Image 1 (tube, one colour):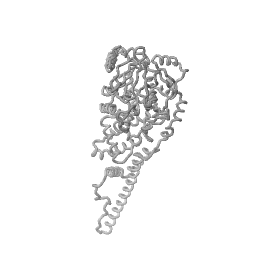
Image 2: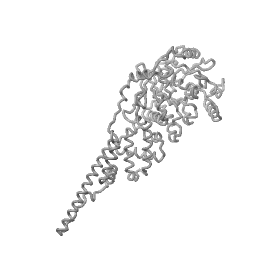
Image 3: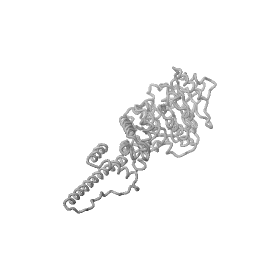
Image 4: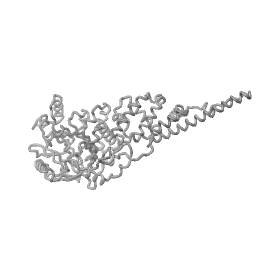
Length: 527
């Protein structure tokens, strides 16, 4: 009898049963948990079974006590939350396949699932702050030019120096407005800050807001520990990000997942070579991460892929063609499941040949021919063996899923969300004091100072007129009253004081006060 996840020693599953290979598909194909953090690839044309492979791997990791994070692009993976059923139309086919590959203890079962959704409709809200996202990824998300990215970096630097927390997009908008108004003073210290660049960033932020991207930024921000939970039975929770609507904004989707990956890399401690991963991260539609990406970003992904395994995190890229993943990143992916590829053009044929050359040959068949020939639910597999050596490529019948194949109903999803251990933690948005409020306070203070300065100037002008009248009729020589601020040194001014002074000088007079009240009144209304 073949155990569900392979042999067990000391209560820790050593491997995940993926399917049957060899003659008659009777040889067990297993993914060793010890090497699951060496990353992986699931590739294949549309409709060849990639989603089911992702589903059975998530089941295996969960049963082995490993939390999983994956994105549900088509809405099919929500079925992980419910057990399969004997009433399902493919029940007989599943049982026949289980018998063929020797999966004797195959049974239906559900798995612990946590649903997440950037739009807070199909799962718990998932947020981060603008400051945590950082200028590099935000520039990628907004598709900024190099010059505009430079201005964004200046804004972030200024926020740090001036103590202006950047939590949501309104904070960033307010900061950019302030930067644009004081570009002349800032350019002397940080380099050229043009109003056209600031305006371009503001327009890009508007587009992002129209796409629903504003929901990503705010508090409470996601705590990484909530992605690494297990249930009361020791099974790893499967975190499913609802991505069907998110895919309408592919740059937002890719940037969010890249941010999450970088956060895991930055925050998790080194664990060396664990017996099993601390978390497995599936990046579906991986081509979106690399399309039109600058080399600096691709280098960052390659660095994260190379180093994050020592944090106990395994990263699996899911895509149609291995060519979608840059070669430096592809070289880091030790475990591979290759479903069928179609070669309709010369370019497709070359891509298929390149894919075949990345596998350790099996003398029983041609890898290139097999990639063309494998059917739905069948794949070429190669998993790392003892000492991390790539295993020989094998034609494998993928095991049937134990959870429901296909989506659950909206009512069932709501039940899972309500029963989640995180229910109520992220639903209510928190709006604490941040850059928006602090800049509003500075603007109001500047308006009051401008009004006071104007009143002082009017008083001094009136005194001067009185003096001239007295001199005309009295003939006495008196010294005219001097302006009170004259002679005050500026050597001790901070950057903030200098900028405030510039604002006041610009806004003196009745027209200036109207600008302050109108501009900032509109900007900060309804906060």
